[in-house]
Image 1 (cartoon, one colour):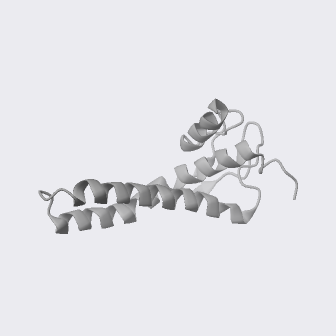
Image 2 (cartoon, rainbow, N blue to C red):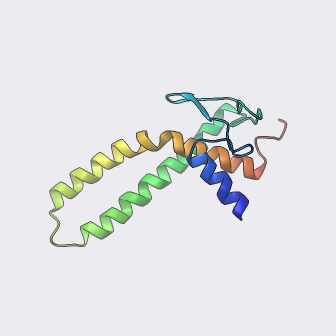
Image 3 (tube, one colour):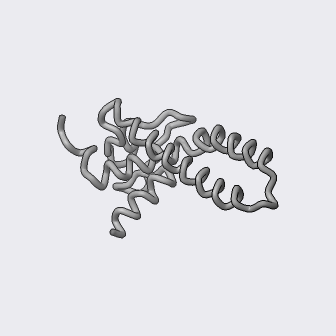
Length: 119
């Protein structure tokens, strides 16, 4: 269990889940194919980007749902500013969280062994 949490934590911090030091991203939104230190493939197949998108979507929807319940059920909070704030969050958070969500997915792939298997 600790190994899984460590791999996900390393992914969140954009470090290699195997050697804990290699950087996952070269620059901007460009993910390295391999770890610069231990050469672990972060995402073997091109379609594996959808896993990171799924992590991003679930995290965004979880925060929006929690915020809607906490603030939406409070009669002191005006509905208009709440909806505008949630809409802005829904637009900006996925962009900011994109790299971390891809890193978390790469950590998950490492733990399941999918990035070491041959096609």
